[in-house]
Structure formats: structure tokens, C-alpha cells
Amino acid sequence: MKAKKFDSEFDNGKDVTGLLDITKARRPLQRQRRVNVDFPGWMIESLDREASRLGVTRQSIIKVWLAERLEQTACNK
Image (tube, rainbow, N blue to C red; front, side, top):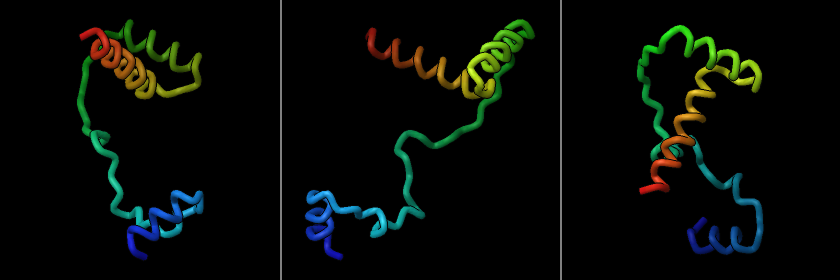
């Protein structure tokens, strides 16, 4: 299918997801990279309590809190 027809169908509200090959799709700026961080014991315990209260993993709460802080810092510049 030509791009013009694809765009037209999309613009007309048709479901074009079946026409997409997402096997090589990438999310810009979302590539995962591993880092190691050492935290004091009291901080791990606090993180685990809060993560348990929210029903998420320790890693998830760390990511969310870091993202919130980075967004806040970016907005203040």
C-alpha cells in the first residue's frame, strides 16, 4: 500500500494497525540501560514499604520518582 492511501485510511478513522510491521519499531529515547546504585539500608526499607503500599516493585517506584523529579527540574529551568 502506498503511503498516500495509508494516510487517507488513517485520516478516515480506519484501523490500520494490521498493515503495520512493528517488529522493528523503536521508542525514541526509551532504550533501556542498566545502572547499579547503592542505597543505604534504611532507604531500601522505606522504598520497599512504599512500593508494597502502592502494589508496585521497588524498581518501578524508583523509576517513577526519578522521572517526576527530572521533569520537575526541567520545568524549573
